[in-house]
Image (cartoon, rainbow, N blue to C red; front, side, top):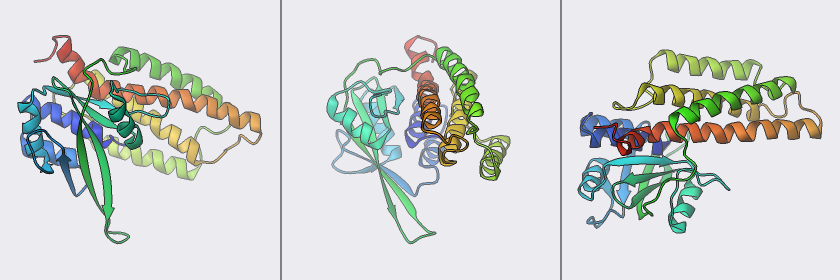
Length: 263
């Protein structure tokens, strides 16, 4: 969770584009990010892969008015609504975009090409039918913020006691790099999102960074089997909570539209 997932970028900037808050060029630039190119395959009415600009126009013509994010993990179909075929593809990719207003979803397939040091990433989004139903296990922004704060406190207590909270030169360098990106004003969400969504997403990403550091630092001070098990028990629920909060932030634009709060 050091940066937005591809599904997050596509959904956030797709929502801004559908709402007329950004230009197609700006939206596509943000969606693609550091990748070389993104295409969408399987769109109704299109015989082959198309670029993001044409794809977003086609989705709009099919009735799509918003985009949600799904970040599923084994045993946790976060943000998904079915059918099983789509859920399986999304679980394999560990992410997906689910349309609001029409029964379609997008699952990314990532390709890398080129020599070491000059690798180009291309992404093909597969458009598939989805079930029109509420997404699984996505909290409101308020719930996500409260749950994340509570889980972070509990996990920090356990990890600090076991000396695996992410310390040392490597951890400090990663935290410094994160702070530098934040200080440069990196835009976390597209125009149109409420300030609370930006706050929740930033906190979820910070928590995700700490979780990554705790895992990457090996066993830290947890030298016994029971201590290692305690660390895992502390990290798993906060990781799940951070993913739920991240999805809640990305999906808040559509949730507000459903409640009649959006334009």
